Image (tube, rainbow, N blue to C red; front, side, top):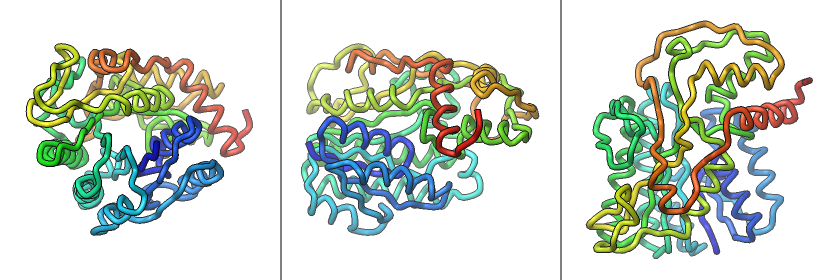
Length: 337
């Protein structure tokens, strides 16, 4: 099939595009190559994709009026996977305008493109941050998500709402998924595992929020990509179809559903740092801090719907995933073991 994937220079988009290309599909990639974090890392990811047959890269910002629709008309993909976004919870406290532009306006342009050209399936990346002030664990897709704590979470909820309305009005089969703390090789430098690794190797102290008590549902990148790849072949049916189980979020008025992608086995940040120290072979200097605004004390995915749909849930423990990340980091940045 021909896929159009947004955010192919990003962490998740790169891994998904590589997986699809390895399976023999064609991938049309879009990325704005913003400087939110190291552009050299993004270009290194793209270089690997560009060396693979079946990949074509297009560089523009999604919020540019008409650009995505024109690309849809020129490439006519069967499946669109929308992963591009302005990410980062704490960055949104200082730069909220980037989230409205990238995540709201950019997603609107993607939806307009899918309206102009019929696709078999639109898959859209949201976030576990959408659960916001919800305190019931595990987070179930059927829980109300009406208390976002940051503009990042609010922008993703807006994208979910817009995607549902487009699915209803123009019968676009749409699956939105909420990611839970994704990590692994080629990861994002702004995320805790990457930051901690760099600082520990440099002998610098690390800031550990909530005194290490915060709990996260860490999801290894290969498991996430496997889940997305399986969901591609399960577009939501038209209204009136029976749900697959009691956990299903199938809309009664649109071919639309929401799915968590997480392992459902959360661990504390302190335990994550312990595993990182073991993989690095050195100890961190931990500066314990209070939980900052916008952060939550715990995330945990309910995996029931994902399992019911595709018969699979993320399963890589941090004891295996973190050493894999460290091995990549040492090779990419040429640090001595």
